[in-house]
Image (tube, rainbow, N blue to C red; front, side, top):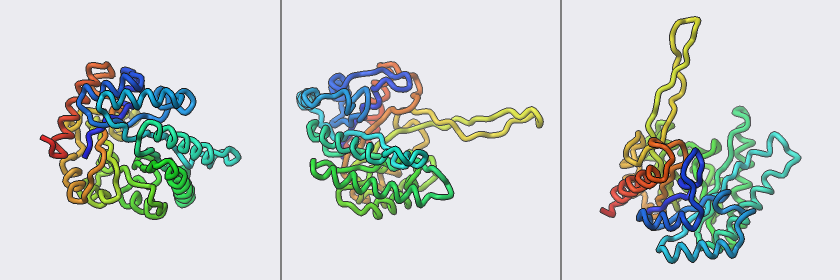
Length: 297
């Protein structure tokens, strides 16, 4: 397994410190990561802003730093056209994935990460499902011409559960579409992480890790002079400091034979804030946990 740092962690989102791509790959090397995943939108690998000459420079910088560029992360939502059917959302997103596949080849990457789609109507789940199946299959087909794998991450609503994720991949049924299965979603669902990981491991090329603490929330109700509970808020913490049972997840990965990329991401509000020093310290602590999980220590 290969420790990987996701550039979204230093993209300036959620008030976090921002680095450009060259500074980011140097940062990843300094922190001790072997590989990187690059965010496929502004301010990083933007299909509008990034020239192919610049991408070649980023690749050279990564090679100089001794860091592999593993993955370019697309941000897709294939169910987005349902509300406005006259707008070709799927065509635009497939074109976006195609461009990222070509950019990924220039960068030396192996994978373009995609999402499925958010549910548009709980009573018509099959419609959203079939839209995602067709779009994922088309992305997988076009990316293969660039030697790029499509990695589906269990993030959006369609297929996010362990069994439904496996079912979605089986229905896509394309050898160029692989799983990027993460533990934090099934942990929030209350699933058995060992069982899920062992089931998904043979289909996987990457997992992306984050850890969280749960913070209870309540809303005051004047009429009953009391509080009613709301869904928990979660806040990101270093790996091993939250409720996600990473040890169980990695036991399942190992038994299932997974040997791909293990990415770490700081992609939500982080305990301690978004300053560079806190990001660096959190990334270092999390790398130590990754090494312990994969058995490099």
